[in-house]
Image 1 (tube, each protein chain N blue to C red):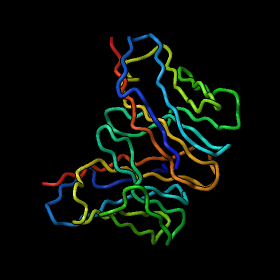
Image 2: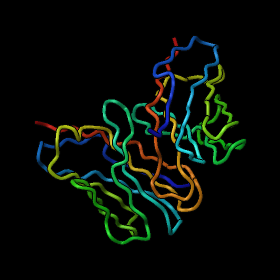
Image 3: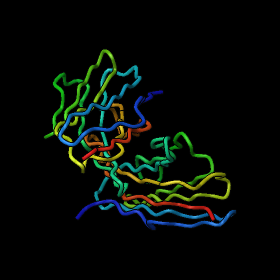
Length: 115
Length: 113
């Protein structure tokens, strides 16, 4: 079974600085999807960024980018120019490419942003 | 606007009671999912349904039941067999053959009193 590991239960960053959240996963599949979700205090889950495993280019969405290392099964999230609104729980998730198979989530990293 | 609606937002249950959490979507998505969220545990899969009248158990299905009689609706019943039901419950849906991941509802907080 696939597993997703987030080794940092909590992280903090100064406003305007850069922070990287780690995620590793275990799979025997060659094609799959990876996601980062944000859960602010409202608890609404928000998709931050997604990556398709067959694409070598790292995904980028404004201040959010990933470092996807397929051989190492690593999928880290970099947040640049951190803002107070970035404070939230961040979840890494994996899904097989085929069908509507469920997402597998890591346990999350709580990010605090210090003004 | 299309989306997923979970109700109620907060729910209180007495010991020994069954309760049903509602999840309705108007996105025409085929697949729907229920997750449970506990502090430090991430999101754990309870049940999912890829098509009407069919559903599969997830990792923590014991003490829960579901139905999928309509494409739009995927209610979750927390039965008295669930020993520790206090948690935050999230419903999600996903369109077939998409890499866009889930659309989530806003969640239901269930507390046993």
